Length: 482
Image (tube, rainbow, N blue to C red; front, side, top):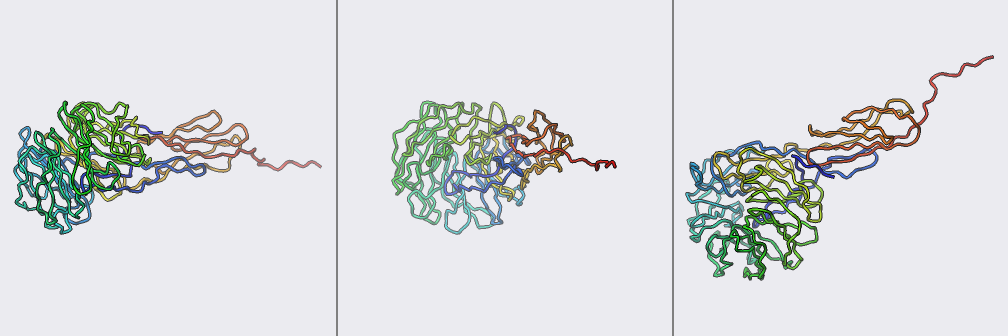
C-alpha cells in the first residue's frame, strides 16, 4: 500500500528518444524486510532539487556521457524568451556526483527546441542533432565533450522535436524531425554523420513531439506523433522495416498535445502511449497491433509539456514523471497500480517554477533515477533533482527476550534512514504503540503477531513478528518445611 508525498524509488526507464531509448532496468533494492514473516517491500530514496543550472530559457535536454568520463552530462537546447541573455545551447559537465558546471561552450545562435544524442559519425562518441526554429544543425563531438558544427543546415521549418533511430536498419542513426506548420521530415544518415532528406512527407500537422517504438511487434521503429492544434488529432505511423512509413489512419484525441511517452503500462507485452496534453493527459492502450484505445481514467489536469517514465516505487510497473508548467507548479509523479491505472499522484511542489521538459538518468552513480528538468524562464534556471540516498538499509523487526507474561518486551524496527518514516504498532492483543522502539507487556498467554506499519512519504510497508508468550518461571525456590 502506497502513500503519496515526496520520495522516489529505484528502477528507472530512461528516455524513449531514439537510439538513446536505453530501457535501463536497474535492480531494485529492498526497503523493508522483517525477521520472521516477510512483507512486500520496495526501495525508497529522497528526491530533492539540489542545483539550479544556468540562466537560459531551456526547452529540450538530453543526457549522455559527452566527455567519456563515465557519468551523464547534459546538452540543453535554448531559446530567446522573456529577455533571456542568450539562446546559445550549452554543455553541462557532471563531476560524477550530480554537480554540473558549464563547459564554456556556446553552440549555435538559433532558437533550439530539442536535442537528441547519438553516435552520428561512427567514431564511438555522442554527437548532437538539434531541432531549431529554422535550419536544424548537427554538432560533432571530438570525444572529450567539445562540439563543432558539421556545417549542415537541414530544413528551414519551425522544428520542435528530433528523434534518433535506425529506421532503415542500415546500422546508422537517422533523424525524425517534428515540425509546426510543415510536414514532418525523415533525415537519412549515410553513416558518416551526413544527412539527406527522405522524399516522404510524414503528415502535415502542427506536430509538437513524437516517440519511436515498435508499436506493431514487427521489430522496427514506428512513430507515435502528437499534434498541438486542437483540431488535429495524434497519429500513428508504421514502418515497413526499410524506413518507409505509412499513416495507420488512426486519429487519437482532440486536445492540444505535447509529449508522448511509450511504455508497457498495463504489462500486456506491447507499447502503450501516455500523452501530456495542454489540459487533461491521456493514456492510450495498445491492442498489440498498433491500434490504440483510450483509457477511461481521469489523469493529470495541470499543464505540463514534458513527461518521462520509470518504476519509481519499485513494484515492477512503469510510473510517470511530469514537470508542471502551470497550475500546481513543480513535479507530479503518477503511480501505476500495475494494470495501467494511475490512481495515486505524488506532488513535489515548487514556488514560481515553470518546468518544461525532463530527462531521467543516474546522475550520481548510485543506481537511482535522477532528473534534469528544464525551465522556460531564465530567471528560474533548470533544476537538478537527485535521489539522495545511495542505498537504503533493510528494515527489520526484533524483540527482546525472554517473552514472559506480564514482562515488558522491547520491540525495535531498525534500518530505515528516511527521517520522515513513522512507525505504528499493533501488538495483536488490542493494544497499540508508535515509534521505532516501543515496549509492551502482554497480559495473557498464547502466541501473538505484532505488526508494525512503517510509512514514509510515498509508501506504506507492513512487517510482522510472532511472539510466543509463556508463564514466567518462579524466581524463588519453594521453602521446604520439615
